[in-house]
Each structure stands twice: as C-alpha cells, then as structure tokens.
Image (cartoon, rainbow over all chains, first blue to last red; front, side):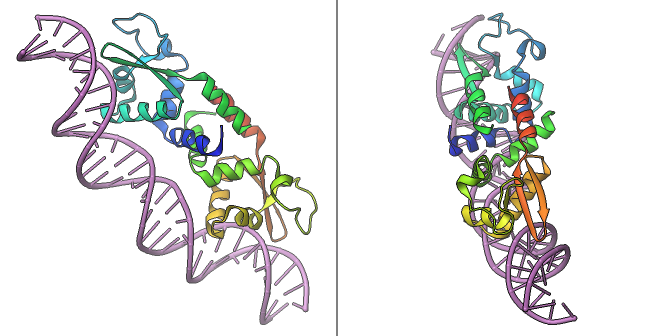
Length: 100
Length: 100
DNA sequence: TCTATATATCGAGATTTATAGATACATTTA
DNA sequence: TAAATGTATCTATAAATCTCGATATATAGA
C-alpha cells in the first residue's frame, strides 16, 4: 500500500452512498433479501438489490461498484447475468494498517 | 463514528497531498527539521514546514490542514504565531475500526 | 506603534465528481 | 432466434473540489 493507492481508495470512500454500501456489505443478510437463484451471500449482493436499497439510478450504482472494485475495495463474481459484489476484507485491512 | 463522519474523513483522504501529509506526520522527525523555537515535535509540525515540503501554496496547505483538523484527523496547537499540526491517532483508530 | 512574519480567509478559474438517461452488451429463456 | 432481464458504458449537466494569488488577521520584535 502506497500513498497513490491509498488516495484512490480514499476517493471511493469520499461519497456517502459508497461508504453506506460498504457498510451494508458488512452484513449482507441484515440488509438485503437472499437472492432468488443462489440462496447464500458468499459472493455478496447483486447490483439490482444494492441499487434499489441505495435509491440511485442503475447506471450510477454500476459505476460506483465498478470504481470500488477497481481500487480493490470490492470483489466481483459473475454468475450468469448477475454480478455479485462483496467486500475485500484483505485490502480493507491493508488500508487501515496504512493509515495507522 | 457514523457514515456521515466517515464520509467527511474520506473526503480528506481523497487527495494525494493530504494523504501524504498524514503519512509524513507519522514520523515528523524523519521528514521535517526541528522547529527553531520549540525543539520537539510533541505538538507536530508548523504550517510553513509542511507547505515547503509539499510544494503547494501557503493558502492551499492552510486550507488542507484546516479541513483535516475540522473532521478530526489532525489536532492543532497554537504557540505564538505558529500553528502546529499533529495526527489525531484516536480518531484515526476509530475510523479504521469503522471500516473493518 | 510600525514592521515583519506566520497563518487564515476570500474570490476565481480549471478540473473532477455526482448522477441521470440513453444505449450497448451479455445471458437466459420462450 | 427473439424477447426479456441484468449490468456496463457513453454522454451530458450541475455541483463540488483543487489550487492559486490577493488580502486580512494575529503575533512578535524593533
């Protein structure tokens, strides 16, 4: 972790909806319904559920999730036509160690 | 720590110079000369030294340090005409616990 | 008190970000 | 293969941020 990457992560964490999403994804089962097809949260939550809960447009949420995945905060897994996003706890841990 | 405050902190951490300053202040004695008047770093580093090292204008650095102090990342102490800034380790700790 | 020094604040132009709608792409299913 | 569904990307506008120079304020010293 260097200053450059930390700044990119900081950019993702500088916006209320994105921070909120990262919080919700701490405990997906408490904030989202189980997905119709797969019945677990092992790979996180699909874009539509996050979009509906956040109350922002689909394109906005898609862009947010992509940017968070790009800097490593989230991990994406694709199953069929769904993209699931979950927290990347390892990178978050590295980031906090960098700050401390 | 709630999402709102975390977002404010994130805004401060979304800019390269500010993240860099927070890094330098981890070990002030390794990055800055001891101050002419007081000879320790107990209260941190004065604005001018930070400004010179960062290579940005005085007004920019002053604004940055103020914003970081406002959200709690830095603690300011005034001695005479100098303002010294140091890290607020407690708040940084709280922020990392919020993220994890 | 006058001047010099350190810091803070104001106003402004350039750049970036927030967010949406339209559209493209991918995948499943009829 | 055509339609439906989920997601990603493009384009655009409003708002926020970056950063500076100019100026104001505070303090110390002559």
